[in-house]
Length: 164
Image (cartoon, rainbow, N blue to C red; front, side):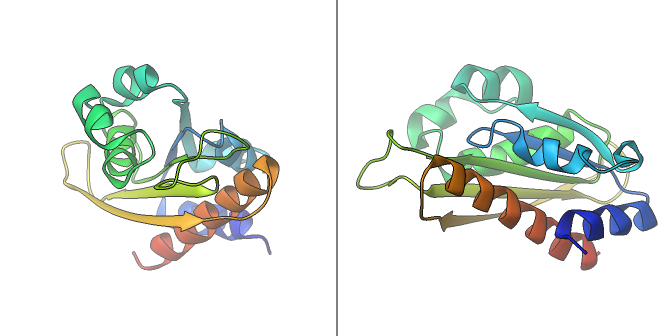
């Protein structure tokens, strides 16, 4: 059973919904989720916020936060995950922002650097949101980095939903 199928089963059991906020994957996490028949039972929506302006306008990520830390940062991934939950009736979120390559990397943030934000809300729309973040570095070309990002995001979502 794939991690996405297992995640779908778990979210259905818990009657939870998932929302995604994606930058470097350009909607691939949402596409992977919605490839499954019946995904409307557990997948709420996906935000593709590739530009900095989209992160601010769609998710409420403060522009100053992006300016201070850069789009590929822990602070922005966390703000994206929280913003996704604030803008969707869901209990679980994933946000990804990274450098998929082949260009755009730096010494501090080389190609393959991806920050993940995972948000969880227990209760209704006003309930507190807990956010967890982590950084990973994936090897390979653009397609490999994006595929590894999707796989990691789905596996961690499965782990987090299973702990609920």
